[in-house]
Length: 68
Image (cartoon, rainbow, N blue to C red; front, side, top):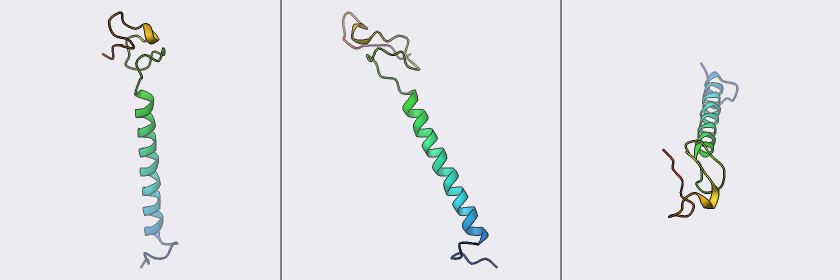
């Protein structure tokens, strides 16, 4: 049948492709999470923020913003 140590075997290619697919999914999920995470008080209205006016977001608390 197929030898698992032989790099020309069907097992090697199936296992390799599965590892590549898993790696791509992990990278894309971590990138998506990094993009989705907004930073309050940076002056940029990110996903999930209602507003972001930089350091003048709130009269009582500096660099406060809502992330409803």
